[in-house]
Structure formats: C-alpha cells, structure tokens
Amino acid sequence: MNKENQTLTMETLASLCKRRGFIFQTSEIYGGINGFWDYGPLGTELKRNIRGSWWHSVVQTRDDVVGLDSSIIMHSKTWEASGHIDGFSDPMVDCKSCKKRYRGDQLCEEQGKALQNEAGTYSLPEGIKCPACGSKDLTEPKAFNLMFKTFVGPVENDSTVAYLRPETAQGIFAQFQNVCSVARQKVPFGIAQIGKAFRNEINPRNYTFRSREFEQMELEFFIKPGSDEEWHNSWVEERLKWYESIGLPGSSLHKYVYPKDELAHYASACVDIMYDFPFGTQELEGIAARGDFDLSRHQECSGKSMAYFDQESNEKFIPHVIEPSAGVDRIALALLCNAYTEEWVAKGESSEIIPAEPGKKPPEGYEARTVMKFAPAIAPIKVAVFPLVKNKPQLLEKARGVFDKLKVCWPSFWDQTGAIGRRYRRQDEIGTPFAVTVDFDTLEDDTVTLRERDSMKQERVRIDELIGKLHGALI
Ligand code: GAP
Image (tube, rainbow, N blue to C red; front, side):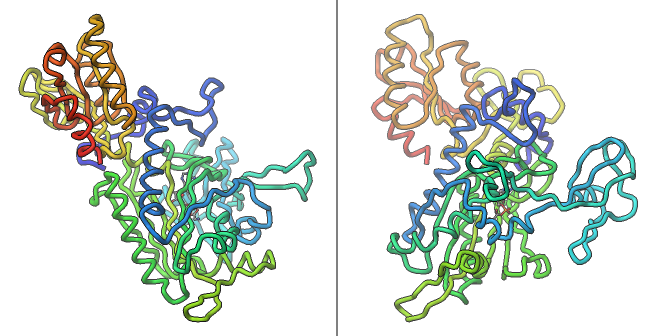
C-alpha cells in the first residue's frame, strides 16, 4: 500500500469502485448475495489486463509453458483423487444465541487465540465469544466442505452429484497425458490455465478478497524429481518480479515461507506472496512444490498411467510439480488499493501537488483530487479524448478523427461534456494515464494538448506523432 493510502478503508474504495464502475454487488436489485461480485466496465478492463499480463509472462514469452481451458464441472472422481471431498473443509462455528456463523480459526485468531486441533478434531479454546452478541454459547467447530454441489442431468441422486471446481488445477492434472502427447514439450514444462473457481466460504469478507466465486490463474510446472528446490526458488522469484511489473511496489510485497510443520504431508516447500492490504498483510498467490502427489493420486483413482518417459535419460517417472496459483480478484483488489491516492493540487498555473492529509480539508488555494495511479500497462482506459467545446462541429470532427485513430490501439474514452478541468478529474479518478485535448489551435497546426495523469504536466504534440509517443509511454 502507498504511504498516502495508509488510511484507506474498504468502504471508501468500494464507494469509488461502485461510483466509477469497477465493481458492483451482484444482483444488487434483489439485495445481492454475500460473496459474489460483478465487475463493471472498468473492472472488466482491469481484469482483462491482469489476465493478459499474466498470460504474456507465464505462457506467451516462455518456450516451456502451454495453455489449457478445461471445464468447470469435472467427473466427481476428480475430487476424490484430489482430496477435496474428504479434506476441503473449514471449521464452522455457530452462535446459539444470535445464530451468526463463523469460521472457527478466524474467530479464535481475532481474539488472540488458536483453534485447537487434536488428531483432526477441532475444539474452541476457553473464553471465545460471539463478536456480534458477546455470547459464549457457541457450537463446537464442525467440518464444513467448501465445494458447491450440483447434479448433472435431470435425475438428482448420489450418482449424478457433481461439484463446481474449487480450483482450476485439477483440470490440468487430469489432462496431463493428452497435453503431453500433443504439445511437443519435454519435462520440464508447464500447463497454465485461467478460469473461475467456486468455494462456499463460511465467511466471505474484506470486500472481494474472500469471495465465493472468483478467478484463478494457475500454472502446473512439471519437473524431474530432485529438481524441486531449484525450480521452486526460480518460480518464486519470477512471480515476485511480475507483481512489481504490474505496479505493486516491492516494499508492499512479502514472502511467507511455510515452516516444515505447516506444509501438507506431500509438499516439500511453499511460499505465499503477500500484499499489505489496508486490512492486513494477506496472500495474493501460493507457490507450492507438491511432489508427485496430484498425478499419483489421479493414476491411482483412474487406473490410467500418469508416467512420463524421458527419452534423454531413458527413464520413466511421474513428474513432480511446482504450482504457482494466483487469484485475479485479489490482484485486482491489491491494484485498486495501491492505486488509490488523495492529493491536494494548487489552483491556477503552478499545479503544485502535495499529499492530502487524511480527514482534513485542503489549505487555501488548493483543491483535492482523487487519482488512481495504476501502472499504464494495467490502467483500464489508456487515453481520453476531449474536444475543448462541444458546439463547434469542425472541432468535434477533428477530435473524433483523433479518437478514431487512438481507439484501435487502446481502450480509449470520449468525453465532450463539462469544463475541461472536471473532465480531467473524472479521468484521474479512473486512472487514465493520458488525456488529449483538441482545441482551436489544433485546427490551425494539427497539434493537441497531451496531459499526463500523475504530474498533470501538459505538452503540445503533433497528431501524427501522438500514437508513437503514447506507445512509448504505455508499456
Ligand atoms: N491449487 C492451489 C490453490 O487453489 P489456494 O491457496 O487455495 O491454492 C490460490 O488458492 C489462490 O486463489 C489464492 O492465493 C487466492 O489468490 C485465490 N483464492 C483462493 N480462495 C479465494 C477466495 N475465496 N476468494 C478470492 N480468491 C481466492
């Protein structure tokens, strides 16, 4: 989080996101559903940019990763093999007084205690209270499976039960042999997938951070047994660099290295990439060295071989896997938090900018502005075009010509209404890095004013040089 944003609340961010069209509550007209969100026009572009950048970095620019788009509903045996049917649960606790429902581990943590777990049975430590009504009359934690259940076809019975996938990873493991046989890849190589995942979270919270429907970007990178540590380290560094490349400052990113006793029994290492959200430092992505657990389990449960034959060494083995697994929605939320900036700008020519002081009004001669300082490559709209006035057909036509040229290169925005200063502020608030104003001089000399969002500096640029100039600045 930026220094300036230390007082940012999720309420303030959610209000901007709704007002400007980043994120809406789902089915709001019916009162919404907790844990589900819709992305508006700008949120949609933001998420497209996140996915595009991830795909560019993880698939397109590498020779050793290919893509997959597997179905959301898979054979229910998939989830037996992966361990989700038996083990994908959270401890649920109910308040007997006010009927509020909690995740036991979170409830204890918030009260400075730890949920007790003896031989797989959870219990609450002494003194835990319901945060809503203060009652200590709580149920013992009960394992609640997070998978959404449905039925395939018209008959609803045990044999037609299916699940909405709780992660995209299993689609990759289940298609390992098919991809291997067509992709002309040799181990080490990876299969990447972006798609929706669903978890019936007991307590969705912190705006979009923990949702019930979300999107994952997952890579399963298959390696030779024994090279786990080297590849794990390399992917952790690779992924950290990517977060910085999309504009999250290194100082707000952290690694949480799992101690051995916190690792799943099959994993040899796991590192979470964490971001300093206003509500605490939380996970954006997990990078796990999962050994051959997943492929072996699918081999066991399907009866189909998951072995790989390495022609160079003449060896047959089940590859180990390194799994970087990130959430699009959490990254979008981190980018929104990081971009949010309140400033005071001197009125008049100087346009001096000073950081706003939280809760105070700007001093005499200054006005407040909210600006979303997205990295240009991630900003939803790249450039806005303004005709200085809207009632001069010749000016409008000229500005339209400029807009038509820009919109084929980047998502661009046309705005002809209101004072020019107000139009700049509107673009600042949605994070558009550049604005182009077409004025009466344009009709004479074919130049426009190009205004940069963060510095608010303006320069005259020839129309025929505009695209080249923006290309350089929008990388
Ligand atoms: N295949 C491994 C896996 O799914 P995970 O840590 O459960 O690992 C990976 O999930 C990422 O998916 C998380 O780091 C997070 O970014 C995202 N994610 C998980 N649960 C989420 C939720 N309820 N809401 C939003 N994003 C979530």
